[in-house]
Length: 320
Length: 289
Image (cartoon, rainbow over all chains, first blue to last red; front, top):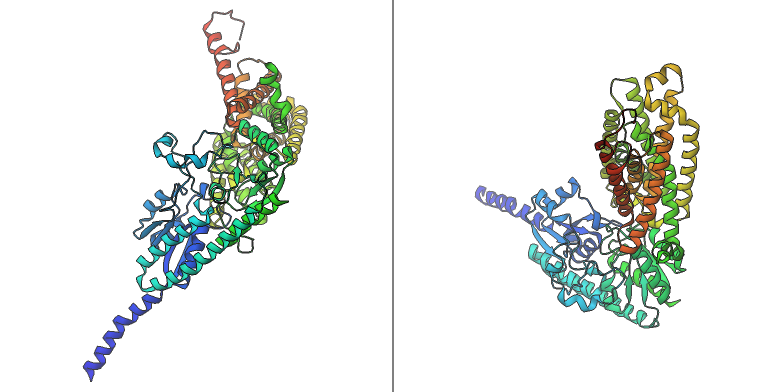
């Protein structure tokens, strides 16, 4: 009798915490809000996501805090974008002694190469350059990546992101893998539906109204997918300094091509764009979201909403 | 050819004209203040101020979100507080101006970083607060020109007493009660010009245009009045050439302007008649300076 009770107690003592462990959400750190949103969609209640660069944050110039190091240290999975988007990340990982799994969301996509010094305004060539985006071309300039990191602006890349995240989550937490793949399927269906919707909207735009000016060069992937051209005074990063020649060149292009709209961004200073708009009589078409979600009460607080908002804003400005 | 290179960029583009106007405004307003800073051996004040305004901008951000107006006013208040406190400490205690300013700006900077990180700000506040000369909108131009007008008027009114305060502060204190007031008004002018300059032009340009032309002018002028005039001329010239270089050679505008001023400084250092290197090497009569 005593032995039986002892056996029961022993089993409960061992099995209890194990069962509780299976229900505790896995701590995950995502580097910025878009990745954070994707992980939450796939992981649901089984993950506890901490995002480093939050809504309306600029990951190009982000400076990590000690709280971030603590979050990374406790995390089982770290989700990063890659393509040198997070220049501050390696030091943070070293400092925080991270020993979980790291997943690069951009693994497997076809990146667009960016050639610094080509002149920021000439981007029709980027599509031809994507085959020879070699690191040694940019070796002298270690501040800018050889590739455009804003890959999430393409919905087809988003599916790759989701696949990479799902695979890693399932590896870290095999007991819930079925749930993750189920969530993934639902999410991918929504992504593909949005993609079809945007394609239909853009197809209706006239051929001579498909060029737009934004603050920094964040929309090349969007442009590649849907056949739009994006020009910008800043280069790949909001940190780059602008020269008078670049602005003059941009203004000339806007005048020549009769570009109808310029767009400010949620993460950068709108003054430069407003100056350009004033001088060319292009309208400010609205705010685009290049690399961060909006606050929860804003129009772009999830990834899908953000993509839809961007597409609608563009279509509205170009269609009118 | 001359037209193409020198004047056409300004004729064709509104943003170049505004950039030139803004640079001229700050040359006329901030550079004379820089001359006095140099005379009072406070040349590094500008850089210190750039850091000192952080807590003010942070509090402005906490109160009103990403409002440039609130952050600028907050920065102004913080800068004034640091300038005033350091001036007060240097007058009332044994600590000199440079050390007291250093102490206060470091405290201010640390406070600013603390405020920013506890609230978990996602944007780089300083990144937003500091502008570029190529993006001067109407509000920024009005701000710059107002600050310049105010500076020029105040400097003109206080000119003689400022000169005396630079040259012999103890004497001034003994003969006039206006000494402390003048000192504080001068510090106000420094902060005002700097914060206005940061907002419109960025830290590099604002501080650079204050100090470099003054340093260059030192080698040409022998009286304070002519120091100011030569410094303003150098500043305006650097602005013009810098903007043209930025336009023709695709260089960032702020650094281009400051580097031209730097070249002017280098040339003055070598060839300036009043204390320049070559002038010192040549034999001269005893009575010349």
